[in-house]
Length: 309
Image 1 (cartoon, rainbow, N blue to C red):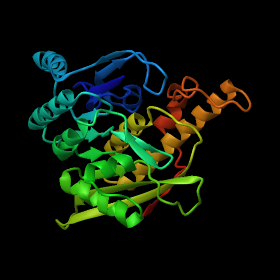
Image 2 (tube, helix red, strand yellow; image 1 turned 135 degrees about the vertical axis):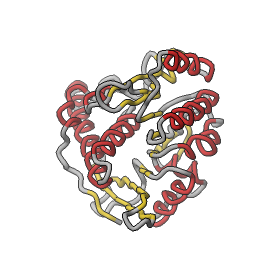
Image 3 (cartoon, rainbow, N blue to C red; image 1 turned 90 degrees about the vertical axis):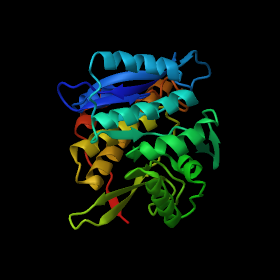
Image 4 (cartoon, rainbow, N blue to C red; image 1 turned 90 degrees about the horizontal axis):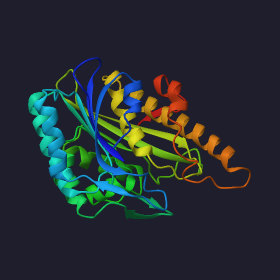
């Protein structure tokens, strides 16, 4: 299932999460309210799933309950997987209302649209969500975390070189977000075919009043498995570490990717043990080892270092 996370006013910073785990931000000191955008028996990597998809009216009903209790002073909103275009459009209305209450609110959006397999991209949400993301959601987002396929869909531009990736990130900046991270790409890594590249770009006004852009590239080892939920994990982690390191995007990015890598390595090691020698782990065995990785989430060792472009 996917939650909209709203964080309450006591304790640490408040978030509202749509479609992501609340465990990670809570571990990192956030108070979290969660609204499920879908209520599924299990994630959609499995052969079968059952459940419900929330629509705009149902989301509004939950949000009205929060407003009636006066607990909508949020610091962050995080959205991820959803399947209903009306729900997504209503999210935009809610984010705009929350930003009027708190102009410093940060909206983090993982624009879940699809991915590439064996070089071919395909959408795994209804196609009518794409124009809603492009025309309504991305312009109000502060941080977005698309994969390469999603970044290409949102801009209409292909990424075949590092320069084209930079141009796509600049295009996404021009739509609204000041922080753009392409979470995975097909670009060739300098360390060889066993590595993949993730790229990040942040625009901010410097002390001299000029707009500055910091671009970072990180190369990380590929893990031979298909995981579900890594996008949610990445977006939540980036939200947390950019909060804790607001003036050091490179460090926040490195901590996010390093923690991700540590979680995935622990997950694949455990899954292979469960599956046995020579047997490819199942989706059930590849469920992310979040609780077991708590220490790595709280204080990740910087095993991945970034390069400034």
